[in-house]
Image (cartoon, rainbow, N blue to C red; front, side):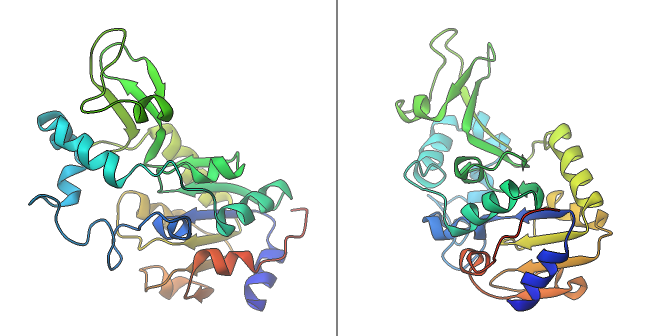
Length: 242
């Protein structure tokens, strides 16, 4: 922890890259860990297949049954990790936050400099007229949610397997990683491309990895910490400036 504190204090441009492990302390299961969302099948189908664009369009009703049950956690609240990252941003230390999560907890905690690579559950768009609907609206529907204006299916604002990431979000995220001097990678197995490949652009001074299990970035890291992301980040003392 003392080394982590020293690296953060010396940083002039700190960026955070996080995954599902950041939100587990908020009661949201991760994806690839033991007991995670992808650990097993759902009604005879692999969860990755359910969360694909093909499944969405061909078996829309089953998709939404899975989506409502496993991906929507409206009761979840930011944990110590989210709050500490917000504190770092407000102090002028954290310059960018890149997340693979769709739960929206970073924004709910107050962070503004957020790049949501895989979208967010808080935005839903009509596939017909393009009308936008908030999460509260979707929570009030059942079965296949349809646009009140045109009757078309309303699609969650998350990136499904088989869909490209938003090019503008990707460009901003890559720029933040390329320009930072210290990068914290936390709560992610780095098993999903193209997001995992973003780290190839890092040319900074210190790479910090915080995760419960090994990652492909461990060998290049300046510091590797095993354990809870929330507990570790909560131990950081925030100094202003940067």
